[in-house]
Amino acid sequence: MKILVLGHKGMLGSDLTAKLGINHEVVGKDIDDFDISSAADCRDVVAEAGPEAVVNAAAYTDVDGCETEEDLCFRVNAEGVRNVAAACRKKNSRLVHFSTDYVFDGTKGEPYVEEDPANPISAYGRSKLQGEIYLRESAADFLLVRTAWLYGKKGRNFVKAIVARAREKEKLEVVNDQFGSPTYTVDLAGAVKILLEGKFSGIYHITNRGSCSWYEFAQKILEISDLREVEIKPISTEELARRALRPRYSVMSCGKFHAASRKTLRFWQIALNDYISSDEQLK
Ligand SMILES: NC(=O)c1ccc[n+]([C@@H]2O[C@H](COP(=O)([O-])OP(=O)(O)OC[C@H]3O[C@@H](n4cnc5c(N)ncnc54)[C@H](OP(=O)(O)O)[C@@H]3O)[C@@H](O)[C@H]2O)c1
Image (cartoon, rainbow, N blue to C red; front, top):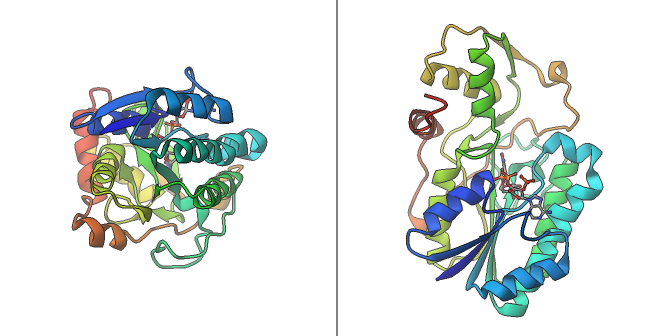
């Protein structure tokens, strides 16, 4: 299958490119090749590649930055999806797209299923939800994967930030009242490959198994990285005072993915151990 990966230099896009490249012909495009907020650029990159499937991992992902750059975040995360979907529809390419647990408000108190109503509480969440709406309206053949709390080799992420601050012997303060499912981009890319090759469509929640608070996630990072001696203090969301609101509990049920593929992603602690022990800079 010929696959076009948009945002192929990003954290998820780079692992998708590697994983899908095992069995498929993969072409990658990123911000230096095209601007997703331009309908003409999207038409051109899809027409030029002529792919059977387009995998869109391009996005504006700075959650706090979205609060001050709301226009840009909607152009990329919402209008960008409309542009890619229209280009895919024109060329009869399937479209795989990614959304987030941050489309939910976090008040449900139990894992969110695909049919639960979205109610984002941040500009990032609203822009991603609008992208989902454009995708559904586009009549393109789509697979929409909602995921959460990603970390991977490329770019900045929570794991790298905690290890870097711990090595500087900084005293860490980490939020202990927001719960989610840390997810390794390599594992997510493998799940996407299964769904794409199986020609599944519709919405799927995919994360590593299990859940924790950011504080528990940080504790595990320190333990695996042999930095147990570093002092870490649990704090509340109010104490951290970040620009964007975040859901308190955005764990998602992956039951639909399991029913479709008969697969379950690994527990997040096992994936995290694998990630840290395979990354030269984190070891
Ligand atoms: N990271 C998470 O924790 C998380 C959680 C849930 C869902 N997701 C979703 O998963 C997907 C992948 O996220 P990620 O963390 O891998 O993202 P990422 O590392 O930020 O990668 C996104 C890529 O898109 C590029 N890009 C930005 N604006 C663009 C534009 N106007 N035109 C073309 N390309 C553009 C970025 O370039 P620059 O780097 O130069 O800006 C980057 O290479 C996104 O849809 C995201 O919303 C992420």
